[in-house]
Amino acid sequence: MSGYRHRSMPARRHARGFTLLETMIAIVIAALLVGLALPSFRELTMRNTSTSLSNQLVLALQTARAEAIRRGTWVEVVSLNGDGKWGKLGWQVVADVNFDHAFNSTDTATGTLTSASAAPTQYTVCGLATGAIGIGGNALVVFSPNGTLTQSSKFEFNVNRPDAKASMIQGITVSGSGEVKSVRGVATGAPTSC
Image (tube, rainbow, N blue to C red; front, side):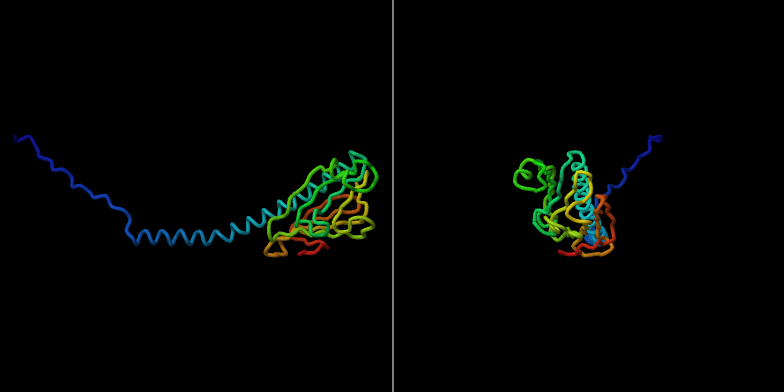
């Protein structure tokens, strides 16, 4: 058997898991990464929520204006809270279906076009009418059949975050001509808390 070589089997390696020290280091690193990401995630969540609220209100205002022109009648965007605290209960868009320039239960029952629910806790949507004449005050934006504001000469809103960061306020202005503008970081004449 001179041509036969005896090969020895390689030594068997024992499967080995992580040591307690390695596991603890991995947990500490993961905790640090989560701790670093959490403020950014919180900021992103607040920014998205306030932008969403602002977009919902802008859409409601633009819908009301377009419907006033299309229907040839008054259309209102009304705070369901009945005052300038638009975010407390939400808002709805209602058309004056009987063309009497007064919004009543008939209009609400058959002329409600859209509605939005209350803002999330700690977010506020505050409204302020300028030159309010007649119905509604700070709780009502009314568009006439030609798309201009009626009952006020200008209407302003501020969508406010829980951290009250002034640079992140969403300001919305409705001019007397009915034009709706939204700008981040610019507070309007409306309250920044309500």
